[in-house]
Image 1 (tube, rainbow over the protein chains, first blue to last red):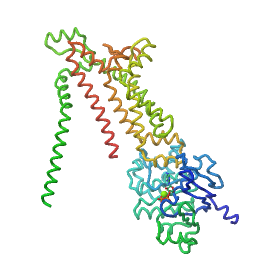
Image 2: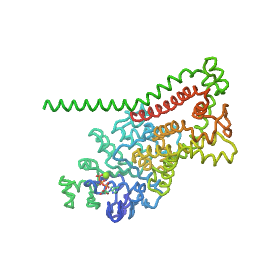
Image 3: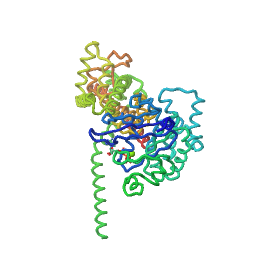
Image 4: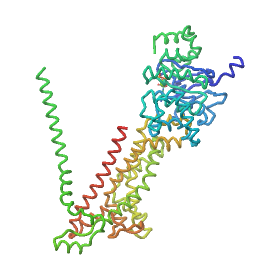
Length: 258
Length: 288
Ligand SMILES: Nc1ncnc2c1ncn2[C@@H]1O[C@H](COP(=O)(O)OP(=O)(O)OP(=O)(O)O)[C@@H](O)[C@H]1O
Ligand SMILES: [Mg+2]
């Protein structure tokens, strides 16, 4: 790999293995480089370790002490497993499968939650600006600008999910991790989020787990195919969808299993 | 086919009637108590009842002889109950919530086992024994019965209830809430203080209300700790009255025995209101 591509790597998996039960790896020796300002889709049959791999990046596994992670994960060259998890999570934001706005907070408060919860007190003007910018980014501003003080949980599922994306964007992460963010949404809401992700590409790098192959084909630049914890194939989406290297990838993409 | 359906309908109906009948039967004693308390107690519930302290046996005797209502009220009991329940709440709510948080966060830790064991133990202890323990802890060293001692004994009885309700409420919160907070780079402390506890506030409040209504009628531990008093007393180191203590005193005095109905009615109404408030909060949370 030449120096220029090397510089373009924002997220690096180096021989990452993760296990829930000792001796059984849910993710096995994954090595991969994710390029800056790209969208990378992680695909694979249910239970192959997609979520497990993704959640390792912002150290969600630490909530559960029985989970062990080995190998190295680097963001911008920083070994995140040896860094303060709070810093790591600011670099790598996460959007979950189910929208999870904070039920006690208004829409406005949800967007700036990343600041207020961390005790960062911004002047009102600055907060207003962040809220407006992030809600515009996710295409929610026009829908909610008159009800910013309503609870976030009053929104529809798709709106809630966009609110959660706005909340993650507010902290200006370098990497946005998304675990099947549209699986609970209807096609229209899904479309909006897909457009949004493509539009966000110049600001950050997106890694998205998806079961929806046409979604991966539509929006991603690179694709990973995982199977039983192994990273079987990792290539440009175009290559993977037209001419996959591995037979298993081909079978999966043709809908023969999964 | 027709027939089968008819039989089924008949069975359903019979079952329904049986259920209604048995529930009615179970409700009879409850209704009987309430009716009796209301019938006998309402006459005495006038303004004086809330603004005057409890009458002496002599005053009551004279009033009865002239055929009028017993004078005086239960103000000393009301204020005493207020103070002691207040002390109990101030002690048991923070401790109970902290323990509840610990239990729900570290359900398998050894310390959690200890908390659970102690909390079940306290719940199983007869309340008179709680009174005796507090008597030796506080009444003896201070050299006097006091509202403080009464409040502490009520706090001990409230603690397991608050712990349990906190733990259950927090366990009902989805783990996605906590993950959402952590994913935003929040510290563990602020996830608990600023996300989990506020989200659980309704449930915690309900639990506290139910715990209060549960200990408000406790009499036995107060006999050994607060003792009782005929005066309205705001000094927490002096003997103090409480509603259930007054009921007990009225019961023991042939001239005052008529007062037990009105005091019981008052206690019943307060407890009922607390329970209704707790229910209303639960319902509101369900629909919100
Ligand atoms: N909390 C857990 N405890 C134990 N094993 C787990 C846990 N979560 C996941 N696993 C196991 O780890 C493996 C990978 O799970 P993971 O959730 O990463 O799959 P996934 O690819 O995200 O699947 P899906 O597409 O269904 O979301 C599975 O075999 C699963 O059984
Ligand atoms: Mg998953």
